Length: 142
Ligand SMILES: [Zn+2]
Image (cartoon, rainbow, N blue to C red; front, top):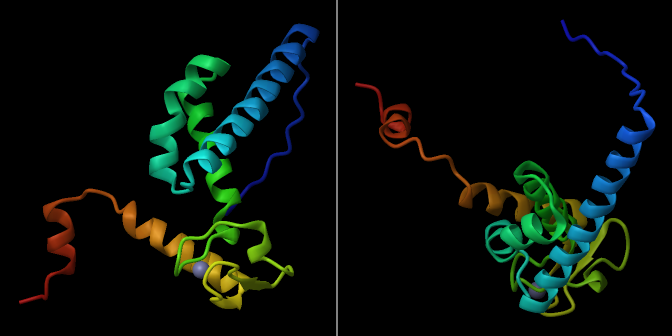
């Protein structure tokens, strides 16, 4: 059984101000991460994380968890604009909501399918390191 609780926060004026400051810092950090990604022409989760994590923590005063979430949100925003064939990232790759058409190489298809391909590739890169347990699970049974 799944239960859902609806919760409304009732912050004090001081807590409200701190929450607003954190949200503004997170938004500024996201703009910074996006700028770095475009400058370096790299949009993968790991390279963008390597390029920006420490700067995000130090310059914007965010916790480790917030820094990781900010970087993830920025990287995810480019998933549907990235060509799985040539790697071109461009807003113009999405001429319509459901259409993907690469301005770099001409590869075209359904936008949801293209985004799924990009997410699948990320998942392959980010496989958990389970060592011998994985071999045990995937080896043929005797
Ligand atoms: Zn392309």
